[in-house]
Length: 304
Figure 1 (cartoon, rainbow, N blue to C red):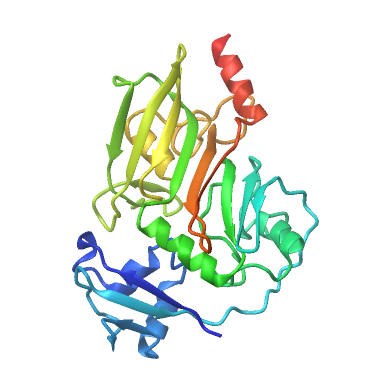
Figure 2: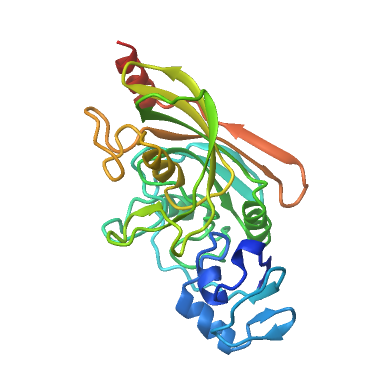
């Protein structure tokens, strides 16, 4: 049976093409071409009416998307150990190790978190994000460690996605950033979009960008680096890494937006806390993950 997702266009989305705006939403996870096709077929409506694929939206528009039927999974489950923090019939919270890719991508056809979830959960995963990303509501980068939430059915997936869109979803990180901050706490509010030259990177820009807000707090200062706690108000791709690099304080070890660091692979960034309203009970659940060994090792090295 098909599922329907409902979204409301925020003021900052007014005037933008609907297909382009929907394709950029983390909660939708459908390609622009697929969205256009579904608009032509009448499976996407605005305020209860079909619209052309070049429709430019208005603030307050209510958009309903009849999601495509999930395709049969063609991935092979793999018996990869998972650090499961919480699990019930609707959701699963897993503590992802640094270096594990979340879903299959070019160069990473096996050994991903999705392969491990398919082995652990079988067919008990939401199908909203399609064959390659079953159950995946949000993502963290390969070299970011920490907590990730997984939906085990489509109803849970939609409820959790709505919390992400409404910015009521708690995501707290810890990071080590290069240099020192003038203020012990602050907010970085700078829109993020695709880099104009390197399409694999994001950057702070006003062109085809989405609002992005990151709150930070200094936990400790070292000779050349700072230990931070960060809270995401929005969840753009690479948001913390891009915002800190924009401030002149790239995440230590981030060789994409900064420089590599001897002894660790990738950035020193950990998803330490996650909180959300349970999609069935409505109860607020919050989970924490202690700093992993690689992060503690970096702190010890900085102290010495």
